[in-house]
Amino acid sequence: MLQRMPVFRTIEAHKEEIAATLAEVVPGVERTLMVELLADAFVESFTGSVRDGNLNGLIEWVDRMCDVHAETPGVATFFSRVCPAFESYLANHGYDQAYCAPLRALDGPIHEAAEKPRRAARTSDGKLNLVDAAINSMLVRLDGADPLTAEHSRAVAAWCSRLARRLTLSDEMVSFVARCGMIHDIGKVTTPTHILHAPRQLTDEEWAFMRDHTVQGDLIVRADPSLLQFAPMVRGHHERLDGRGYPDKIGGDEIALATRIVTVADCFNAMIGRRPYRPPMSPARALEQLDKNKGTQFDPDVAAAMHDVVREIEAAKAEPATDA
Ligand SMILES: [Fe+2]
Ligand SMILES: [Fe+2]
Image (tube, rainbow, N blue to C red; front, side):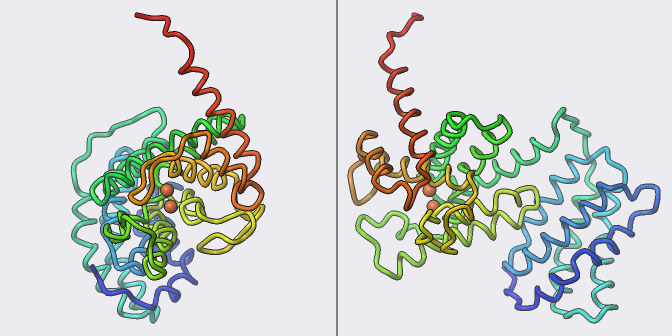
């Protein structure tokens, strides 16, 4: 872990200009739009990684980019040259020298990733697979930190997908919302296990730690440029329609529909699941709780959709099996 640095805002204000300069490490003909996009994403991710004091996510991301874009001209060249170029740009433009240490630490692993021989693994939808790979690596992390939260996350993803279908969202939105559900609690990798599994109500101080998983999750997700689109949902899944949630106390339309779906799926799954300090609720009782709190905590349309989803599942269970 590197020491956290209070200097990131300096770069933050000039990210586009820096990225444009960095893209120039690639000779003209190979400087494609993809190289420019990767330069933007690199600067974005670098600032986040330095702020959080953790460079590993950035190294993993570069490795994945080199795999996915193995056939794209300029990508390997960009990554093999970017760190020294970044460092000399910062030195020549009067930036804080504290950025140099992380760039030097990154140079070796990133250069190695860029030079690694790659088999071009072309897929029909490389972008989707890239997001899936990133989400998968988040789940592996969660499984390692707390298998129960990982299990909960998979279940929430399934509820999200059912709710999104019931709300007749597009296929693209259904899969977006399901992925949000999959990583909504990723910030819990930073929550001490004795707090996650406390067999009692939490103290105020413990609650502060627990609530912080939303902010930590936001930071973790933002450190991976292919997951940026999920960050607001990860941060906002404990917000409430009436503005009394956390961490930002936003409310109403400020909370995106995808987030409102995750919130209902999350709370419903938590209510019907086992908790260290109480037995599971029946689905009927959990639906009552959704109703009691719709309009204040939960989106009423999403709560209504959960009734339909549960009814469908129960109807399917009641149907006699037709195959042997
Ligand atoms: Fe959560
Ligand atoms: Fe959750």
